[in-house]
Every structure is written in structure tokens, then in C-alpha cells.
Image (tube, rainbow, N blue to C red; front, top):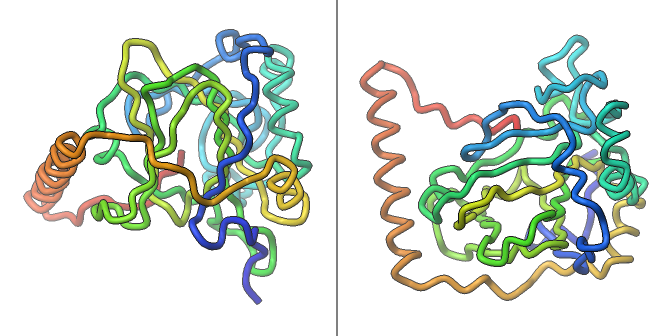
Length: 257
């Protein structure tokens, strides 16, 4: 039967939407409660919607009863502090699973490449239903930061680098694409991440905000690209050797983030 997917994401696995004027909204992400949850770097997460409406970040399949990343329960104390973020997450009218703000501490391109990961949004998702993808709304004005997308974790061929100023909006099939953010600087980056179920509602939302599957790459010098790729290779080899020494296979399972 197959899953219901958005045609707009079929070619590249992502779309970039019209930029949102984030400066008009208050900085609600500074008021909500965070968990020390690690994913793709030095991070914390502040959930707005979780499996049962509690301030926790675990995958829905790790709860009882286990389920896929759908039907998230809004957390009253968080929603009260962040009504605009909640409204933006609900705007498409698509089913919402997990909805969280990520706080990412500064890192390098090499860190980003080492932290590239795929998500496991569709674990336990029944065939014939909507495929779960993720929306990313950049909240802070991170003009020197960029999102990295790859079809293959270790192959830079076709790498996509999307700029992350305040108001940047993209939707990514994060179970298909390896992804992470490069965030140089001194202050944390904040981004609203929402799990949405594909279907006509999400398709209409993408069309409304002129989603496109091709954008110019954020410019990075070839020297930095080469150095980052070499460092990724070195770190992954060291990681594999570490697990081999313990008689274990390298842990490459998809992230739960």
C-alpha cells in the first residue's frame, strides 16, 4: 500500500518555505522549561507536546502503550508560556507528534558532520497512513549558521547547506536525510522542531508558503569543507575502533531526537 507522502518532498527530501518575521514575536523560548536531552551536539530540549503531556523528550515508542510519532499531547504549563510557538506548530492543521524547542550550543562544521543523523519518526507507523516529517523554524538570528543535509552520511556529494537567519522555515524528511546544524558563534541557537504527519493539510501549508526543494547553498570555503570531511572520517574511524575493541558493532541506529 505504501505511506502517504508529500510530493513536494519527493525529489530532494526537503522544502524551504517563505521566511517568517520572527522579530514580531516575543522570545517565548527563553521562558519555557528545558530538559538536558542530548542529540546531535551539546543540546537541551523544551517540549511543548510529548507522549502524555509531561515535560520529557523520549520517543513515543518508548512509552506504554508504544506508538509512532503522532498524536502528541500539549503540555499546559509550556503552552501557556509559548502561545505563539504553539500556534505556529499547529498552523498547518496536520497531526502533531513531538513538538519541542532545541537549544544548541556553538559547534563547528566538523562537529556537525560527526553529528549527522537520521530520525526514527515512523517507527510503528502503520502502512497506508501519513509519513511523519519534521518542521524546523529558526528562532534566533544565526546568520553564520546553516543546516546540513546529506543523502549519505559520509559522502559530501550533493550536500545541501541551508542558511539559518531568524524566521528561516524548512520541512525535512529526517528519516530519509542525514541532518545536523553548524552553529559557530558564542550564543546558543534556538529552533522549534515539530513532527507533522504528511497529507493534504501539510501539502496545502507547503503550497501556501511557497515551499521549494532547491535553494542556493550557504557558502563555505573549500578548505573548511575539506577539513570538516577529514575530521568526520577520523572521528568515525576512532568511534568504530572503540566499539571493535569492546567486541561490539558500532552504534549507528537512528537518533530518537
